[in-house]
Amino acid sequence: LVVWQKAMNFVVEIYRATGSFPGDERFGLTSQLRKSAVSVPSNIAEGHGRESTREFLNCRSIAYGSLNEAQTQIMIAEQLGFLPSEKAALLLELAGEVAKLTNGLCRSLKARLG
Image (cartoon, one colour):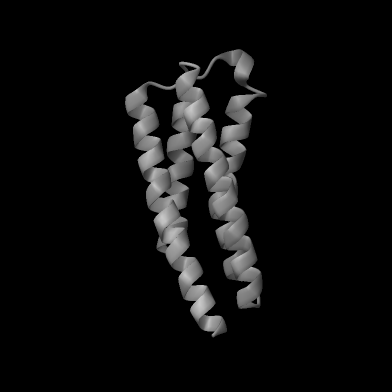
């Protein structure tokens, strides 16, 4: 799925960006941001592997929630000075692309349900 591929790219960029966060954030914002980012493609993959469309929709919903968490954490990291504004803007743009694709997936899945 294209949404899964874009979400995977988002995770890679998050890992690269958080690599320069302060060491004392290793178990704080670094961990939280990485977890929420990883949750996005993971839940899309899990949903795709489920047997019912309703289960896929549920996993898509979890992925979307995790994406919103990651967006908030990117903004926090920027405000704390851990991310330059340009990098935060790029990450938020990538998250926006994933969000659009995730919403499209949701519409498609709901159409299957009738």
